[in-house]
Image (cartoon, rainbow, N blue to C red; front, side, top):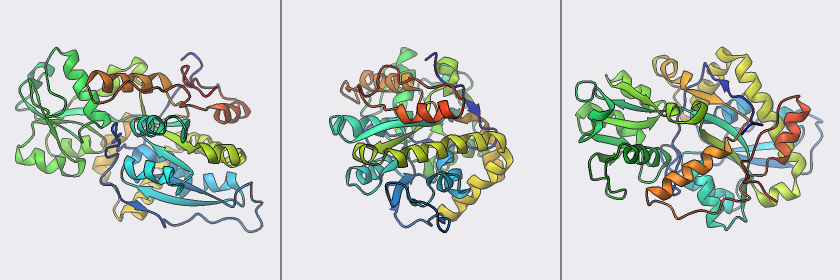
Amino acid sequence: MSAARPLTTLRTIAAVAALPLLLTACGYGSKATEDAERPKVAAGAKKLSAGEVRIGYFPNLTHATALVGVQEGLLQKELGGTAIKPSTFNAGPSEIEALNADSIDIGFIGPSPAINGYTKSKGKNLRIISGSASGGVKLVVNPEKIKTLDDVKGKRIATPQLGNTQDVAFLHWVAEKGWKVDSQSGKGDVSVVRTDNKIAPDAYKSGSIDGAWVPEPTASKLVSEGAKVLLDESSLWPDKKFVITNIIVRQAFLKEHPDVVEAVLRGTVKTNAWIAANPAKAKESVNAALKKETGKPLSAKVIDAAWPSITVTDDPLAATLQAQADHAVDAGLLKEPELSGIYDLTLLNKVLKAAGKPVVSDAGLGAK
């Protein structure tokens, strides 16, 4: 990926990164909020080829680009008189369903549901058009029971859900250690306990799990309960980079309204640059957006501990998408997917060139 743009470390943003592989939960549930507060359109602003663009994202900090871009009006500014209709989702399945049902046009989502959405539609419904975030996943453990990585054998380790991206990553790591685990039951040399992120802290406090391979801020919430970070997943990837959030689009919308898609991408590129240049303000913006969407911001203790492990990036880190798919196949959780054509980075690279930034690679998986 020699043409890839370097990542910008997000010093002020935490991550909630639940990335489903078999269309499993990407967050804390599956309900979409269809009538989120709309950004205001400037009076007299010129509309593009569509009167509105419906954008889906999660109230998770791995979706900081969307949260900040909407909160600060950076996306709306690029769209002019074309209004944003935001919808928030707590899980990959509901967002993919919304995209398939023509209820949203563009979505921020993890690579695994993107893979599934693409393959289940036989490559006919979505395209990945940009990256958004990388990193933010850790193995945290009870330090009284687990002191070294080898001590994980024989213990009870939580992952968010069967087949989700952290589940696959943990199963892959276990296999690399030479240990055996049945991927479906979670039984074997390590007990894989599928536990929703929102109840993982209580499960840890009760002693029903000895640790967890989880995204932020769940990892930092566990640390606040006495757990210790034993491994950061980024250390297992080349250059410590792996995709956690992509931007996808309905192919029909891309074909009919490329000017709108390009405007959104100008907005996301500018938003990522704004986050990098204004880390303190970005932190405040994300928490303000979370409070608006969920009714409760993250505590300073959790967000301060979690934010250094995530990066915002325009680069979709395409090679790591293929690797994640390969890991799922090896674990027996996914049939060999045909990913050729899943990316269309044409408009993103046009925007990056215009901004004087290096173009990014689709790792040979681009639309022909």
